[in-house]
Length: 402
Image (cartoon, rainbow, N blue to C red; front, side):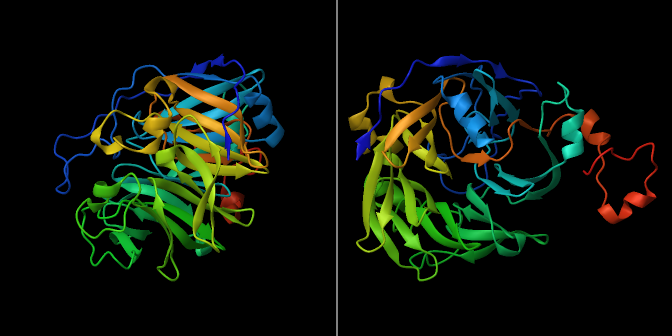
């Protein structure tokens, strides 16, 4: 296993804070259930967001023709990391404790405290954004589904366009239905009933061929918050089809992914990225990085790994990363790992305003935006089915496909 390589100097990153930056606070009347947990989603006033990055990060995104989406429930923001010449542009939008994300073509879903928001890329609106000619995507809201506080974690679009998500509070995988808060579709065999008590802290979801295939949880437990008792080494990775536990003894695992013929996973408690050998059931660490690893996506031979600072709380006492790294060494941001060498080759570091990252996604758009609070733009942007365009007056018809 390779440890992190020495980083080049970090370049300060001009953070765009356009859009109203709301400091969203959790409601005082929390739903009945487990007691508040500092490890679980919350939103706080994080102060100004400042970031820095290694000099090679902008060129890396430019070469990929991509940007990064990063959710931080702690700071209540979706961060859009975009290449802007010799520096990164970290542009953010406010949400209430955003966590899981799902991408599918021009669709984007974001899970928040009690809602799932779905957005669509509208290219004609992107062409209208300032500065002119800069943006190549603009995501506008199309629907909002109220789930209630289910502690939504990872999300993914599956076959038939169904949106799957990890319902952590009810220890199950679920989909959406217009008549229901959620539709429970699967739960670990050891969880005997649906109850909003976070029995095993089910958190991660890997899709294969459009279907849920692998999940991670922090414990093989069937009682309220039972995972806490052995959080340092009680983590598991499971096969959804069979219900079998493929790997035990993991430290707070998150973000399973099937990629390149391997089952990758973040062993968050040790601050590593690795894979599980399906023949032996062993976890093989590939890279040790300077943070609690959570949030994972890939592009070619590169892995983009979310990093969170470990807070000094009972939840994180005794996990391996607190023994490997001092508080000053623990980083929040996104690191880029070369999978061939197991080395960190680029780093984005949030120096203030963000301490916890949940999801990371590589978006194949160079300079996107997302509009969720500009009422003037939303009230004047309309999308109709293609077959209806002939009925639209030429004076208001978009100049190109929308």
